[in-house]
Length: 116
Image 1 (cartoon, one colour):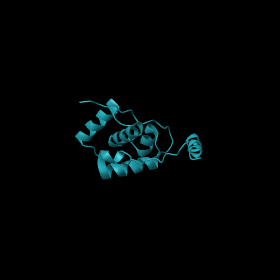
Image 2: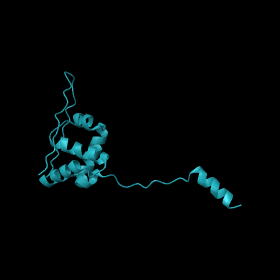
Image 3: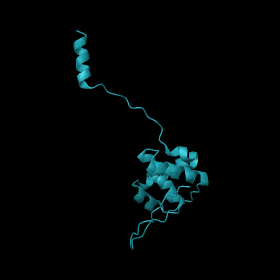
Image 4: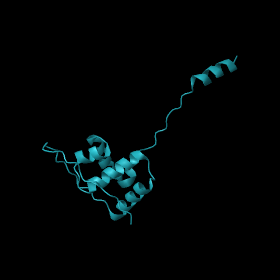
């Protein structure tokens, strides 16, 4: 079994912090799957951040601390939590959006001259 070392939440001094905590229960299988993906680098770095966020929330971290630790905004954390709760691990992968490829100017110029 692979274990993932989870850092402790940062200490923010005497400042008042948000107290939003969400109870996120991961099954043992989900924890093992996430740990495997993270340990072996099998997912895109953006998905890694989302998976790490879910692990930290499962550990009981506050949303603000999780957002700071993984480099995402609090609204994004809430977005990925909602997707995770709806679809579990599969929900953390972004849907594929194909990009439209623009023809470079050089190719456009070449095609203009070929038609003459």
